[in-house]
Image (cartoon, rainbow, N blue to C red; front, side, top):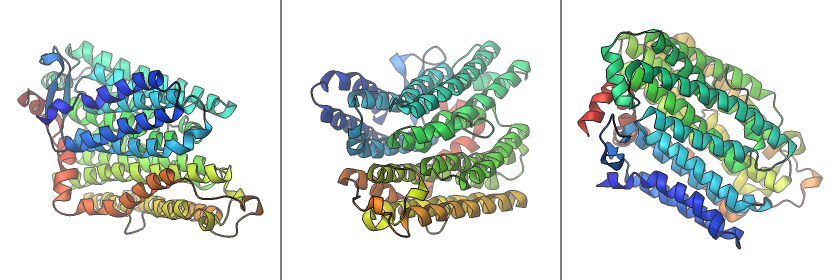
Length: 505
């Protein structure tokens, strides 16, 4: 019965994006109300759908002729993450976006982006995935440029160019698989590939997907668009880009295709591990030298995505090598758990940076100091998020990093474990700098008149801060089996995804 609710995950944001500009012409506050009602409804529906597994046939057409949406453990987890962060971002936007004009266009674009991400997560059709990916991507290009100043327009243009290259490569990869199998349905492609011999089209598709989704996920060396796009966007959009967009369009789409459609191989697993290590190390060392707060956070997004890709890639490599399934499952658990944790603490950090900029008018750490005395809610939540991303116990980031380290040790890859520990230490140093220069010390005279951000901004930050403190409980027996392990099982099951889809038709 719950599957009837599934189309609402796309219908509500698409309908909201159409209606808000029409009904909000005479009241810009109405845009925020309708936008928040839409994202809150999506969050409630995503929670209602949780642990519901099945296949929704659009128009009643059975695949491979028709398009189907698939709800399993992995899509359940991603839907909750996407719509939780979306609600926190729109709640923060009510006050923060008052300094901008054309709010109805902002919320319309925002909901289009959410519709695209929900569609990517649910679809079981590769071309449908591309369509939703483009809806989310094009909306995000416009939202990065929303301030229409020189910095925003330049960053949005660079993002558009590189994002379009990524989209083109993904579309070409889909075309290769269609030419090879005659199908666009993921489950049908998976069965056809498993039964046939690998050809150069199969290899080309894999390479194009790695690069295309790597650009969308801003993984090294495909990351140059991100350090400019994230700082330039309004703070709620920075939170969305880092918190969920690069994960949904990049990491989620990549692992869904590689594990469940094409099939993980030792070579592909090794390449994924290498990309993860490069992203972790290069991202964190580029972040340390930054004095623009949002640019510093942007580089840390690259670094933290490296943890996610490393954990999942390590699990895929072990599975493909047929060595230790339990260790593989542990590594994938760590990667997916860190994906969820990063969505929360990095979104919180960008919202905190927006709150600081809202109060002080600057993003430069050297122009700040002593802010925790005047901005207590922002300061406390920023410290919680900083300790979470640095992996300090008992915050959520510690537990997911620890699981990836344990998996690397169990698999015998001690150098990987050492790199993770080193990167975590450098991350801690970076955020100690943030706390030292922004929150502690003496308040500059130019900032004597600042005051805490409005209630709704503080409330959205507090909501995410509570999650940073409480998400470690997801490892408790019962919660782990009900929330994280179903998502892990989808990936460890690999090409068994196809049988599960056809069994639920």
